[in-house]
Length: 177
Image (cartoon, rainbow, N blue to C red; front, side, top):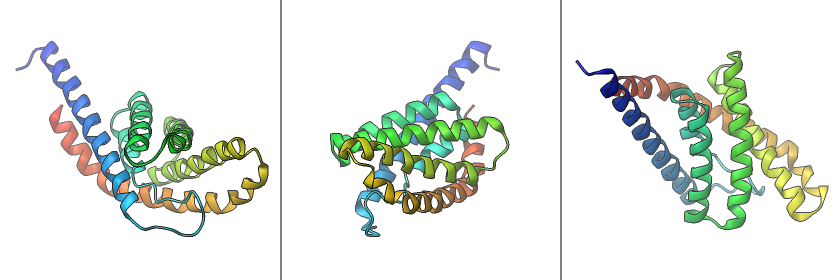
């Protein structure tokens, strides 16, 4: 039987391993998203596949890990697949999204797809605010209804996928503890 110190070490190792796997998943999904020719004709609309890893992290680990994963993913995927300007947009949207999802989960009043949908919408709104300051005009706010609808649709999709995958991943993670 492991001692309390050994159990703590195993738990810490499992958490670090889980974070590493979630970061790898997020980066792989970011790369897949770059490869998919998804061009609906409106700037800024993406599937948000990497958010799957963030949602899973929220329900497996906790808010600190979500923020760490969010920042790390946005910076690394920006350097790997984008530009410094993309990092600014991605990081702002991702942080706003993560904070909204953390808050909604803590209320315990919403199901996973709703939390994910709110994250998708808030991600797009966060990026839209960056765009307002970057181009120094409020004209980009005309995109808001389309970006809200897109964030809602992709957020629900990611939330449903997360709901289906989470029980299996949680089972594997708990066995590692």
